[in-house]
Amino acid sequence: MYEIIKVSKNNPDQSILDKTSSILNSGQVVVLPTDTVYGLCIQAKTKNALEKLSVIKGRSPDKGVPLIIGDIQQLFNFTNQISLKKIEFLKKIWPSPITFIFEAKDSWGFSKNGIAIRLPEQELCRKVAIQAGPFLATSSNRTGEPILDNIKEIVLQLQNVRLFLDGGRIKQNIASTIVSLKKDIPELIRDGKIPFKNIMHTWEKI
Image 1 (tube, rainbow, N blue to C red):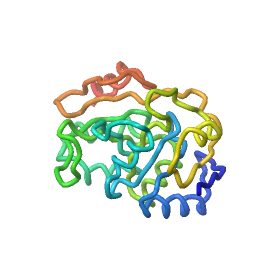
Image 2 (image 1 turned 45 degrees about the vertical axis):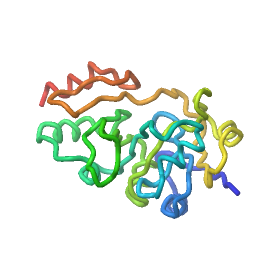
Image 3 (image 1 turned 90 degrees about the vertical axis):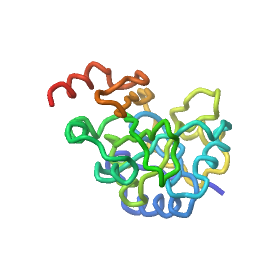
């Protein structure tokens, strides 16, 4: 049985954060508004987390899913050591709708191609990631179907979701920009909400 709760994206009630964190920590799936799209989310430490999300989305578990963190310190639990310049760069450009790809620590079992991590602008996601721990989040649509921007449509499309947080329509509905930081300089992987030239402008100022 699922539940739908109205939520403020930038001023979430503590009781909602408590409930969401409890559900995520129990290994169940939550849909919530991120700073780009509605996300299908599961706590990163959950056993077979990628497989659970993949079944709901109807796609292969081989495809990676971005990790949402609540503060920059959580980054170092998942990645290998990165340079001081990259750390300063991240401090200047995060939080934002930019997903960065890093080398993953072997202990987490992520792809050798790296791990995608985002520190969102939106307060709801950051607070959930701090209270429940970092969580995996992918767009809340079935594979091959359009990305949906309101809970009523999402509920009709997805099964095996315990909680839907309704933050209203996400007007822009634009995916995050994806940039790799595995090499010495940032490398564009996918265009998105933030232009790559703006990202490089910040990099070059450090």
